[in-house]
Image 1 (cartoon, rainbow, N blue to C red):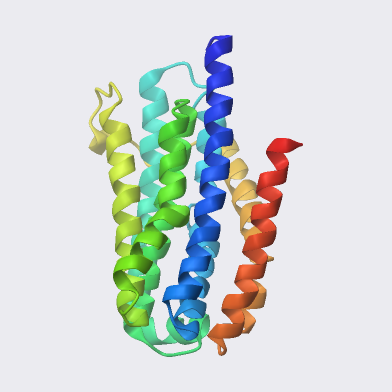
Image 2 (tube, helix red, strand yellow):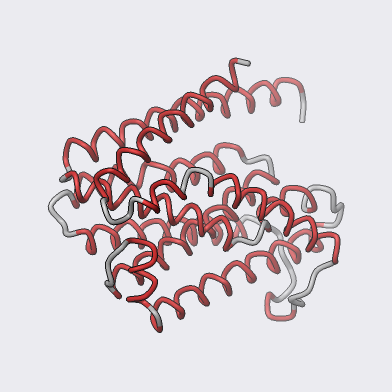
Length: 269
């Protein structure tokens, strides 16, 4: 990568930092303006919980992809590793969906303070979309396709949420959750499918082993747990307030504004 391209990529990333931060704040303002207080609080709690558990669900493999994919000189070996990682995240996502089918009311009561099987199903779909979105983001990052990676991060971070607010402001909590979850899952799967279609991959996906080396496993475990704990610090508070979604929503807004401020300050630093 030449000097011009490096500068261009840095500019792209900085530009998207401001765009994503603006749309995140816009989504909060629109949610407060167009949704009822209770719906806004519940949806923000759903997004926070989904980010929390979606981060755990991807098992730290998105971080491992960024470390081990670029360091492998062989294209087919890199793509084998990519396929194994995506498979494992897909399997864990499917497992969460099956758990929500079997224990939907219990999960909904635990996470949202009300026993609703449909909400649990929407939550599991959303978690799957978020976890696969992490993989899609890292997939484009390791190929230095920063526009693509930022677009998927922008979509799943705020843009889809803004779209759902405009077309689903009159929906019930359940319908709104399903709309948000399905669009997130579709965008993540499409991004992953698009990524593999761009690669010159000559090996059948079905002939690839499910295993990977122990150093990758330990790296994934430590990075995954660290990220999980980091997001957990801003998830526990709203979860404690799950029986009062309005208060939980405003607490999440406060956390979000602080995170956005940190995000904007870092590039300047």
